[in-house]
Image 1 (cartoon, rainbow, N blue to C red):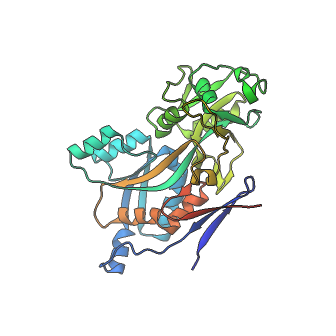
Image 2 (cartoon, rainbow, N blue to C red):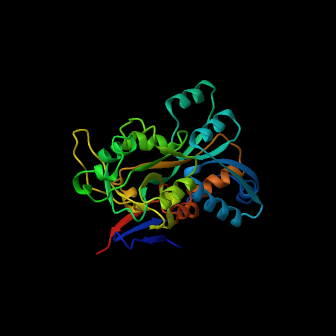
Image 3 (cartoon, rainbow, N blue to C red):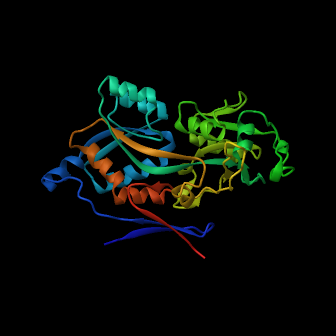
Length: 318
């Protein structure tokens, strides 16, 4: 039995292990009959744009293993995904946030039952052009940059004083996306983004803007800048980030890495959920089971994110 898959870090000296456990998901059913109805047919799912790279790999592998299955993926913003689920336009979604209190009230009011599973932890990367000499920022600096208090890199102080001089080009994710709101809440302490910040409608646009401008800064889901496991793409540079507590103490600067997401030391995190209002024994059950089981979680690991339904262990290498 294949007991684990490992991911070696060249830069951080860390190993993240994923252990597999075989669990019987359904009992009292004829296995062949269950397998037939849960691995065949057609399924349409809405997918949060932040998780597009990961879900493409998950769907490709599931349909490769199950030749009689077809999964149609519609890429949308987080708010659109949730709205479609609540309205009944689609029965299964993948999204990078939980329900808001208002959305939960609607589910309760209209007696809409859903199955919700967290299946991955993701990181929000603060990215700059590789030619930019800045390597780290704390939440105080991010707040000033993204709300417009600082408009030139030269206005940074502390360790970044005099490191770089250029007019800042600030790019943000569109407002209907979970990453827009999570970054605003965590890094900006819920202060508004600068009116001069440029809104990117897709993650592809964000990458294009940052990689073509030395003075640019933005943020993006880790899944969009991962080549394989803990190897990041070099077309942009993710910065080390430090949180700041309520009395102004700056925490340690933490780099974007699977292990630091797994142990919750990286300060900008979000979770990926698969949510369904489909309770029939059909392809939706098969695909959700795949995401939560070993093969689906292995794809999560190899996509640079952190599995949550299979145990992981972090080992420090000397």
